[in-house]
Length: 114
Image (cartoon, rainbow, N blue to C red; front, side, top):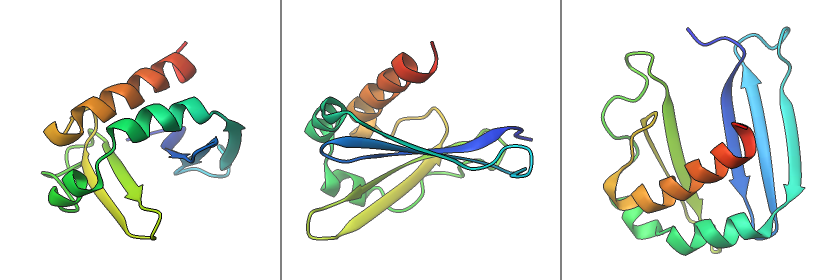
């Protein structure tokens, strides 16, 4: 059972990063939104993002969070508005997205697990 901020989402745009944190207990842990300028993150991640290889994976891999292990997702939105999201077990890496996820996790560890 997760306590505290159990949901954390990052959105990367060409010039900024947006962070959203939520809890199952909003009265104890109110929603937090933040944003900052960081074009380097988008440049690094977009170099490894491939919409077609993400779309091939479908919407869900395995049974994410079925055994309370958590889940993660990647979602891409193209300039033309086309979107795709795939959900997978926390800590796993779909092979076609492994390099991108490695860079995202390294970025997260540098910035939030100090």
